[in-house]
Image 1 (cartoon, rainbow, N blue to C red):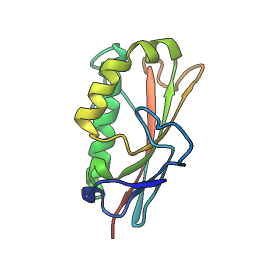
Image 2: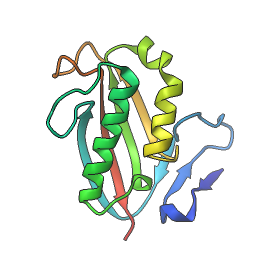
Image 3: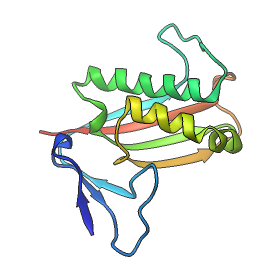
Length: 141
């Protein structure tokens, strides 16, 4: 069953095979038409490239805020996000922070109709970074 998302997301459609369980916190796939915006990996530092916190949730919140800021430069909004890849340095820390990460995601992004992948990596280029998130958005025509 292909389930359409809300009207505020333009022409995007969440792709959900009928015999698969519904995922929690992401979409299996998204189909959309429009202007594509590719956002480089964002980490938990501020506009001055300083880390306000070493806390995983705080760094995630900042990385998401950075994505929203770059997206705004393209004339986009969080509901235009269609894909994210999360790189984390500690899988257990990521899983333990699930509630706080979910809250930050809901507050800054709003919806879970984004195709997402999360992978653990040995390290990120910035030593203090605990998470890096790449994003793709499509702004409807």
